[in-house]
Length: 130
Image (tube, rainbow, N blue to C red; front, side, top):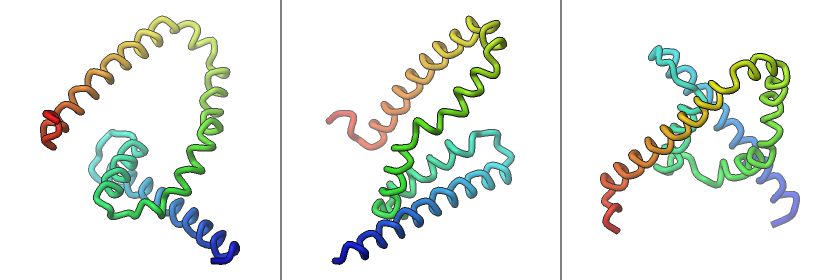
C-alpha cells in the first residue's frame, strides 16, 4: 500500500474517531437533559463509549488514533484549570483546609466504592474465584 494511502486512511480514522467522540458527548448531554438527571455528561459519555467498545458496536480501530492524540495533548487540557486556580487563589487560600479535607475524604470514599464495585463485578462475571 502506498504511503499516501496509509496517511489518507489514518486521517479518515482520526476524523471518524473525533466525530464518534463528539457524537457520544452530544448524545450523553441530550439523554441527561431529557431524563432531567444531574450527572456530568462527560462521565456519562465515557460510560456509553466504554459499553459500545466492550460490545464491539464501535470498532476499536476507528477510535484508537484519536484516543492516542487526545492522550498526548492531555496536559494542555489542564491549562484552564491552572489559570482558574491562579484567578481564585485568595478564595482557595481561605478555604484550603476544607478543600484538602474534601479531597482526602473524596479520594478515600472513591477508593472504597471502586473496590466494592470491582468486587461485585467479579462476583457477577464469575471471575472472583479465579
